[in-house]
Length: 149
View: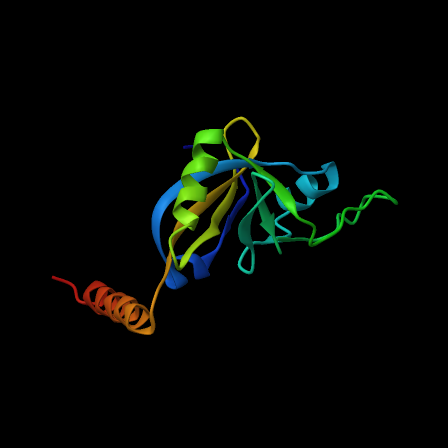
């Protein structure tokens, strides 16, 4: 995928969760939200996804107000509908029936057609020892990259 300027990552996602399945979803946004995201004024690190009335919704995603807009501002923390196929939503609903499963955003980007897309993951939360293993693996990789052969 060739991506344009927008590339907002949720760095907590890989640290907090084991990702089993990934989906790419569109989002229902207002004009000022799109402009603000293209300026890089969005945060998905505290966001999470839920099923409401058979639709997938992202909550707690912060998009700052667009400074140049007049009185037509958007709410910064409103719920935003995610656009997925029925089969994909059905897969997510079936996964969420398992205990400890969560749906979380991974990455917000602009695709080659200029549309804003959100990569979401479905998985289980990591335990403390899993997180320690990840930190240990990163430290080993860092040490190996310092050593020149």
